[in-house]
Image (tube, rainbow, N blue to C red; front, side, top):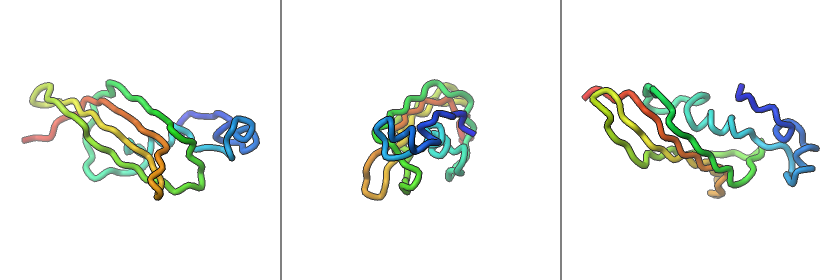
Length: 114
């Protein structure tokens, strides 16, 4: 589904040979969850274009670790009466507040009618 077929995501043995305890969750899955491809967010919006996206994977996330995420709008600007730019920061963390990933996205969105 996410296009990542690296053995570190499928094989405990391979992951252990690369300084991991066991296989890790693919970054594409983390992005899909936090961007709304797999879960539905509170207010669906129309994204017209992805301008930039950057993920920092701070710690490996293992499949048996329950995790949470936040999405924070850190800035926005109007392009015209129909479109705007929104900058968000997504943070993936566990119940002990250990951070696993931080994503920054800049998108062009269809603006809500006034």
